[in-house]
Image (cartoon, rainbow over all chains, first blue to last red; front, side, top):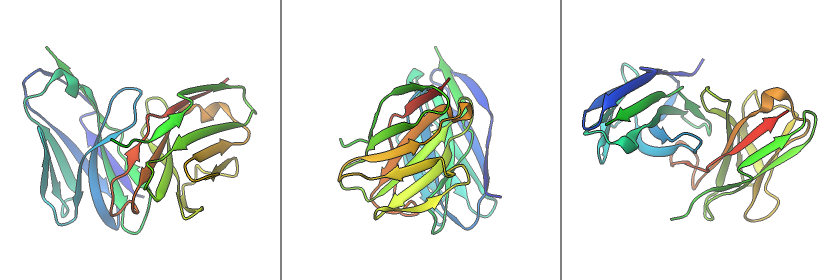
Length: 112
Length: 115
């Protein structure tokens, strides 16, 4: 069964600190992996999209990595800001499919 | 910047009633999707729609659900006879190409509460 697992479930960090979120997936055949940011009560917003051949992709203070061999991805947030407080969701798509498979997300709280 | 819009933002209905959730996708997008998120759980795929027909649907999308593109701009999700367990946030999304090639843009969601 296609699944996406994320860790940790929640994380609290101080403003200005860095953090790394993890994602493991068992999705086949793999097409691409995305990281989304979801603010409470809002729709997900895409941060990065990576295909099989991409190992890393950055979007400002967000850097995602992908190891397609071990089926793992990480999202690194640098110099966190209060506005980074949100749920970060790892999402995988299947080749030739239209559905996105969502992880449950990591809830990040950035405090001052 | 173009965005996906959804109405209403919150819908309250009685069990057994029909509801229609509305979405206006980004204007040049060709693929449309509905997802739902039960409170505290992950987002789940319901259905994708392309060229006026369903491309793919999940096991959640049973006979109680239907989708329609009634005109050139709207995309709707109908639940014929709502159940308590249909209470969730429903997100519409659209993309220019199929998901394996293109980013999906999500709307702000409609919170459905079934009493």
